[in-house]
Each structure stands twice: as C-alpha cells, then as structure tokens.
Length: 331
Image (tube, rainbow, N blue to C red; front, top):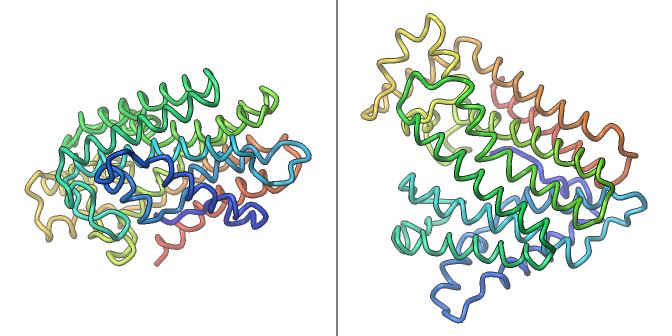
C-alpha cells in the first residue's frame, strides 16, 4: 500500500510515533509470555501506523497546539491501532495468509486457533484502553469494531459473485476501512476536547480519506508490481474479491470475456488475462477519479481550520494518496 502517515510531514511530532510503539508493546504484555509473543508479533514487524498518525494529527488541529501529544492522545492512538492489528490477525486466518508485513503471519506461525484468540486479545486490550478515556470513546470504539465486522461480512457474502454491485462494494469498504479511519480522527478530536463542529469535520475527513484509501489499495492490486505488492497483481480477483475497476469492467461489453475467467479455480494465465482486460479498458482511470473525489472531500472538510501542523499533515496525506496511485497506474 502506497500512502503517507500525516506525521511523516509533521517532523515536530514524529517522536510521538516512537511513544506509540512503546505503548503498543506494553499494552499487549500478558502474564503469559507465550501470549505476549503472539500478540506482539505484528507490532514488532512494524507498519506505517496511519491510524495512530491520524489520531495524533487530529488532536494537533487544536488552536495553539504545540504539536506534542498528551499521554491520553497516545493512549487513544494505541487503542485504534490495536483494533486494526486485531482485525489483521482475523483477516489472515480468513485469507489463509502466509506472510504479513514481510514476516510470517501469526496463523502460519502458530495456527488459526491461536491467531483468532490473539486477535481477540488485541481487541480486548483496545477496549480496555478506550474505557480509560471515557464512555464516549469506549462506545465509539465498540461500535466501530461492529462496523468492521459488518463490512467484512458484506465482502465475504459476495466472494466469487460477479453480480456484486458497486453499491455493495462501497458499503463494504465503508465498514471495513473507512469506519476505523473516521474513528481514529474523531477520537483524536474528542480526547483533545476540540469543539463539536471541529470533531465532526475531522470525522468527515477520516471517513472520506478511508474511502479513497481502500479504492487506491484496490487499484494498486491491479497496477502495482509483484515486488511492490508482495503477491501477484490481480490477487484480489483470484481470492474472489471483485473491486471497483473489476465491477465496472464486468458491467461493460468486456464482461463477456472477463466473467468466465473469474472463478474459484483461476489459473495464473487467467489472472494475467483478467488484469490485462481490466487495466486496458479505462476502468482504472475511472476508479482513480472516484478515489480523487473522496480525497478532495477529505481536504474540503479541513478548509475551515487554520493552517497548522495537524491540518497540514492530514491534507498532505490525502493529496499524496491519489498522486501515488496515479504514478503506479501510469507506468
């Protein structure tokens, strides 16, 4: 995934991510060293920490902010990242993934049962931390976990279904991706005690960015190289997940050739031909424009804020997101 953590363009706050890393590891420490090892596996593997970055940057949009996160903001950032990590543990079980972030996946290393339980442990820790930040934050995080589940179930419901509608796709990514990015931004605003209208604007930003984020990720699955992806281009189609460019290709005259290739026994040649069809018909460009419209809506939500490190970082992240996928598509 090609994206930018807002803290990458907020050097005065880059130290906050170091604090997040330490707190992440501390949060998954159990009385059982074995569980601690499993729960910390993906934390130690690293990551872009986009969601914690959004939480911290959202808080930094406060007027007069010096860009240094409080202890509670760091806790909030940790809670949203733990939800993300817990969802990854579960996703890898569902996908039978072998690797994650260049290391062996938890399910491949310890088995599905332990991966599921460790994912549950991460979600429980996230909820525990959120509860220490107040009822509103705890309730918001709980409802977001439910939305993540709803979005993922909606995707699974249409696996290998070439009749999947564009509306079903958008509702799925609203739940499985946009919801947590919106919550990360909203929690940052709540914990920083920002005015309600500013919190709503940050929530709109996070949601719109999340929609763009997932569309971009889906486009990259079709246009990025295997070296960049860590898997062959078109892997989503092979897994029966038909994303926006694929759905639009299926709805066109190209659908007659594409549809027979999209099966649960797709060969490497089938996948390569399917990618060629989708990438060659203008549907990539159309999907990038959808991502761009969501990213523009995200930036627009910040228009009422005065310039500052938080606003500048979030805006730059949204702008870079679509530019990066356009560069990959143009190769």
